[in-house]
Amino acid sequence: MTTALGRLMVRVGEDIPVRTPRTPAREAAERELSDPRYHQNDPNPIQQTLAWLGNRIDDLFQTAAGAAPGGWIGLLTVVAAVLLLIVALRLRLGAIRRTPTTGGALFADTPRTADEHRSAADRHAAEGHWSQAMQERMRAIVLALEERALLTPGPGRTADEAATAAGRVFPAHAGQLSAAARTFDDVTYGGRPGTKREYALLTDLDNDLRHAKPHLAAPAGSRG
Image (cartoon, rainbow, N blue to C red; front, top):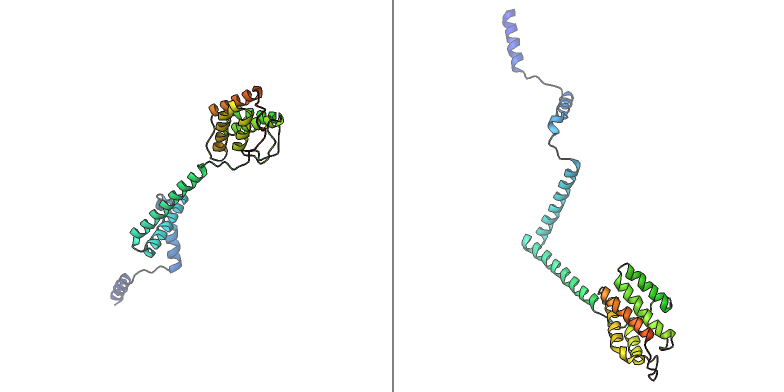
């Protein structure tokens, strides 16, 4: 009897599963998963961040494609149209910026002497800043004529007006003066970079005018 009862209890014990309490089981699982062997191939924080950003961007495009007529094709069409518009505007604005204007005043800052402008031109030239050097040299040319009383001072005078007036005083140099004014406008208002050769031409013109004999019969200082 006792033996039969014991065999029955063993059989019943074999049929009943062993149950581990919930909290110890969770802690055991966490300890097991914390083993470094399970995390050797995990992405680093930077990779995780990039993956997250990629998912967000993908979600954004998916949402935009769903809202755009025609789905992805419609979205790509809209993006292409926007890019073409940006390129067209950039080309148009660039062309406007490069268009020379001749309405700007020759002198925009505090008045200086011709020699001061020459010194500034030489400093810019020594540094290879040809545009600034050409601007200062052109101002020196006009101021030198004003200082010699060959031109009437005109604070709002443009380079073209100064060249026209100076051309009446020095007819032999009228063409060079007109070309110098156009170069000044191209560099100052047209956005075209100056060159070493152009600066050399302006310097030669400045030196020639300093030694040239003026044609005093012409009305000095008249504005063209």
